[in-house]
Length: 57
Image (cartoon, rainbow, N blue to C red; front, side, top):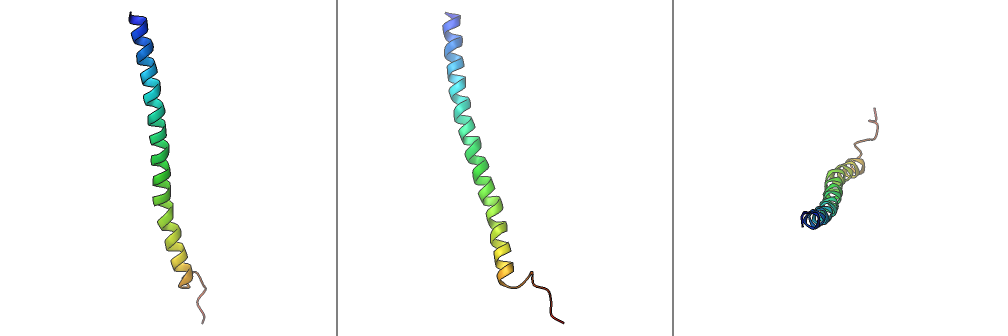
């Protein structure tokens, strides 16, 4: 009886780990998009306003 229960518990824990792995990956993706996206947007905005051009004297 204990062997069957331990096998079932292992199966459940494996399934939970797979679901957890998927949520970790999606969380990393969301953090990457919302972390890098604004930086790219700010860089494009600054470049379009001439922030990175050398000043004329």
